[in-house]
Image 1: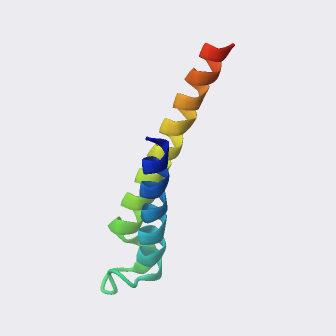
Image 2 (image 1 turned 120 degrees about the vertical axis):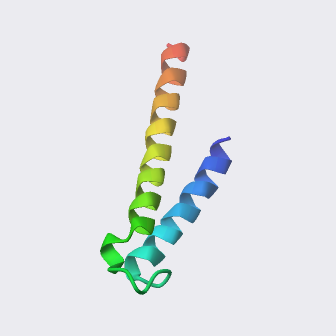
Image 3 (image 1 turned 90 degrees about the vertical axis):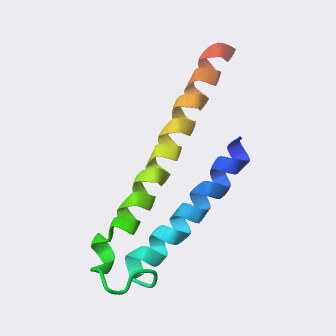
Length: 62
């Protein structure tokens, strides 16, 4: 599960950077495209999910 989340996160970061530069959607203002913000939000959700999961594992080990 962790490897899958890492791969998905890396793909999201790649798409996010391409969206920010305007390569994927050149007609929309590049820095404000919904593609960029959608990928940024999804990557943030993955980070938060993994942090919560790691915190629960650490509490169980203590």
